[in-house]
Image (tube, rainbow, N blue to C red; front, top):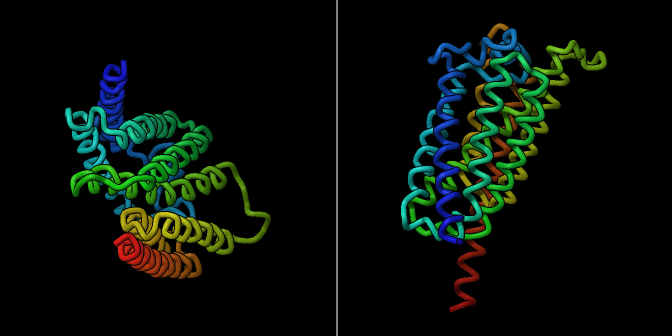
Length: 269
């Protein structure tokens, strides 16, 4: 019974990865769909809101999707069939793949409001997967890259994307920010995204992947606000400051975690 359950889990992850890849082709416009930045009336375009990252930022989906494909294939190998770590990670990763496809479809069908609960649920699922990945160590470098690295990149980017998505829906619905102005709201949302990055760095003991994708997204927000059609120097400065803080805290957390591990090893010895 357990072996059948393991095979089912592996199959679900693999099928979910295929669905996500099909969804990505639709979202890119390659399969006849409207590119995400042009769908839903351009609500997610680089110049739609002060929090929208520049177009090249979405190139991060390439390593994320490659990582997800690699994980789906790797976890299907016999060696991973009864692995306790993959039993824990499998279904959350599969759920994230399905939710990602659902998010793309919600944008493609102009259901912008529906995209918010979908991406928030996706963020929650990825936080769960990230916590599970921290609960035990990967067995080797391959697992570190395809499992932990992919989940980290995915989580960091979706953290930025969630902020951008919620902001896009508010702007599209006619929200005017209680008269505070776009610069104030831009700085405020960036500050929240930066805080999320700090919390992930501390909780994740300095994991590099989520920090890298968070900084990538925030960096492109800064570029878009300094060089795009929707200029906002305060938002750009806030994004650059957030990147700097995330890098510093990640380095601190990583050094502290390494020092703790060394001390623990000495005590054990």
